[in-house]
Length: 499
Image (tube, rainbow, N blue to C red):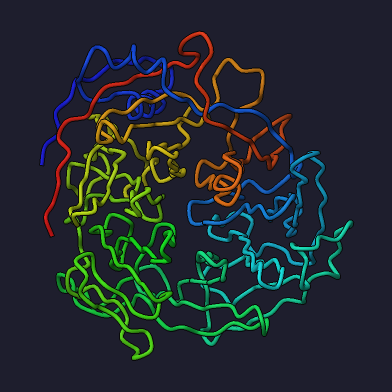
């Protein structure tokens, strides 16, 4: 598969930055009218910033957070590691901006390990806030608030409002914990047990009436044979219920080894809250109650053939459109090679249409190699998030080498084939924009759905200190023309795949 395009030239004193900027701003050839029409398009515009922690640990946002930041009622909740390696919970009053914090006795086990994220979940049925933190193939670390903590918020926060550390699992280890909710706001918890290239994904469901967790079963198994390999692990994107409570799950598999062994785009859905699973064509493939999980050889789960040595990046972003169809923003090398120096990384848009067809298309097209080390690419840090507006226009954002977040956006009316790219934080703004941890930045989905405000957690560096901040954005038409530097051109070479 080949993608053709016209490359724009950029100069910068930093060679890596040149490649990075080219990766986002070099788009394939297209209409001359696109740039002019882009002046009238909605833009993601920053409206404010609140400092939550100062100073903090550098690793506080990661791509697999799913929910780092959650709004319920008049408050927004987040967890983070401070500079003393302690776990903190912060509550932000959305109307006043006031922030309260409490400090737990828990300390991060390794401040240089970016896997050890902290995430939050809510169970509105009993008003509890749930915390999970500090995992990399380690026993569960979990705390839960008293009942009514989020539904009848206390005036003053206290550690006494939370349980001691609890382990409710039958599995010995946890990595990548994720809380998520269905349409009735029932709470779920999914995690990997085992290690990279040798792990299983387990699902639990919370019972608000009893304040207990119940094991639903293994969703994705390490078992099966793929090109002679007999073990692996899945790396999923966000876990999302649609308006009809269908649970969508998309992932790549990794065989034992570095991330160049990742392969395929795989997909399944469940219509009974994770109990049974179906492939994209509607055939049953898994039954958790019968101890029959999804495996690499389950029929019809691979929706796009992406071979090993494509450097397809795991744990990227996913969103559902108004027709309840999944869209993923991921990255890969179009040149299939085991050697990092030979890669040409593209940021990709993958999506499904209601006819069951899957499509893939590069947002960017560059011949530049972006990476460092034999098995580690710089682009691994460029995972951000993705959202849609009411017209199903898509917006993806991610950081680059110049420490600025960029947005790539496209219209449904144009088949998501024309992409406009611009800095989310303008380089000339007086607001500080320096990012430290260039990964993750998962927005508050609850606030976006309710208020139309995009709240994004960031780690920034000011006065020699790492700070944890929340930035708020809205969609707005620029006043007096295009206020942001942008490039807007249609992309050719998108491919639909019948299943």
